[in-house]
Image 1: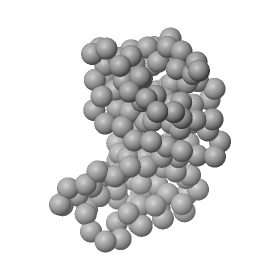
Image 2 (image 1 turned 180 degrees about the vertical axis):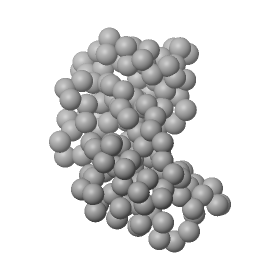
Image 3 (image 1 turned 120 degrees about the vertical axis):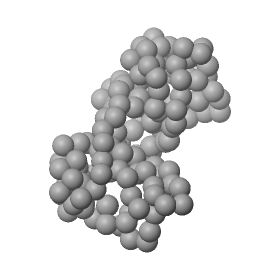
Length: 141
């Protein structure tokens, strides 16, 4: 997902769903039918609707499938960062931003091909966040 980088901007798809039984199954079935593999997923909900945020390798295929099925979806930039698997790693990363980067939300992704857990973060400004993370030595012992 990060292609040998420790942090990079990723394209995230946000899908708006009614909060009723079966909607999430329908959404994931639509993606599966088009061969879209989910790399990360999170759901935020309210009483009436939910927002499903996904990271996939095939953004254009996923968007076409979702729109064809009548889902409302949009693409936005998020930052993916490999986080060392030890206590305090996330706290260290967040202190690097030193008030210059705002965190709107985040969620984690773990998959077999990753060297480390990946935090997906909605950060502003994203370019500055990636620059800070790439300059930091996050992985020293």
